[in-house]
Image (cartoon, rainbow, N blue to C red; front, side, top):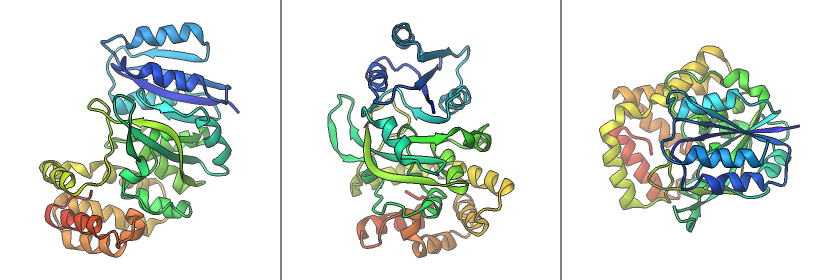
Length: 314
């Protein structure tokens, strides 16, 4: 039951050694580590080659032309041969039982995701977990609960998840328009044999200026600044969700009513049509959409305010 680890790299010389060392220290040793480098211009490749010389489980692919974050991950995943696939960023640190925990807890589900502690560029703990930074209060009780959340937000972090190889036929190739591979993987898994989330810690997630995604614990002042900035790009914000839901609607009938509602929700916000309907739908279904109670009233009012005024869901 070999595990394939799909890792991508680009100018990651500062942190990639820590990430690879944490992978090579796993309690499970039966794995392959596939690293696709996207035309790095620093010393990343030389670091990778040093590790490869010491460990035959490591395979390196040097891209001839730059693919970009998403397409590079698609390539890395497509090269995996294991029964299970774990995605990996270049700048985090896995706990030594990362793979063992995910493998032991995936069960009959197609995918499992877990939690991480946020660290800064120096490796210092910032003081919150990824789940807390996403303002998620409830742990999804089942795959259907997680599916409803995934139609709007994403709780399954790529570098903290494991999925079965049998899911590849459903997720590859990535549809045009999606921006986040982990969200796409989680939504597909939830629709099929299930997707599971646990709040147990299995990695240290590094947030800094160069990584693609970052997390911050909810802060009202910072969040209002974010809302005003996001307003400039609001017509582009929901293309990812619309692309996912449209593609799924074409090929599946699973939970068709909820997919239709979610798709209409984002299309209305993106085009400024019937925004009030989307706001009322969001308020009515807030608990299951956000996995957070209305009694967290500052966050609830902030989200409704941004949705009503700017058409932005944060």
